[in-house]
Image (cartoon, rainbow, N blue to C red):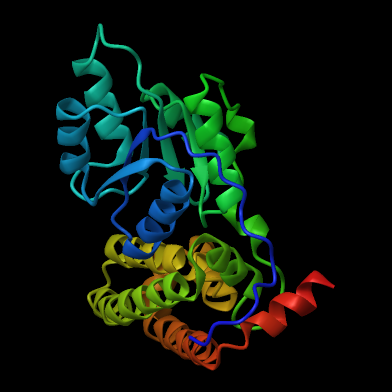
Length: 277
């Protein structure tokens, strides 16, 4: 990507050198979170499965843990519950969940499982930094601060929200943007055929898992059209997913191609400037 003057000033960081465990199986999301935390001066240890997160918690020393809701093989609630049970007598480690949407009853279940709070997806750098700094400082962030991810997706608009890429630029410049976009293209290209297979097999549980992963990827590169289309699956009954799954996946593929083309054209700076006016 051709270097040019940033639209936004760089994020102000205050390195504190804490050790943070990040349990996230979505590589696009993990890359963004890791960069945000490293820019703050933290040391990040990333894992991609629930058992790996639990092993790290018991065998390494951390100041904070961030665990994705849908870690493979053992979700964040299971990991946290087992860790809390096995670490009785130790100093309490703050553990935050990384979630998309959650209703009050689900949030209560997370807290009862031993998590201290939750951070919404797609990840917003300022929000993540504020929450991490608050918990590292011993403060409690009320569950009511959890953001519904749907609220940050505007109605209509272009395939790409340039403001999200502006945030990525502030984190790591053009090289980092290129790496995150490449990861998004790779992950989405893998997930779309898997969605087609799940639709053909009428496996609604697997279908929704893949949709969740695709939605997280899309949100963290500002692919708002694809994000909104993924989000729409939450209102679809299993019967709809079975009956209309093929057509729905075709729409996802078309929107992905639109997003990929917009990213390839690299005109997001103009869109970010227009949105800021």
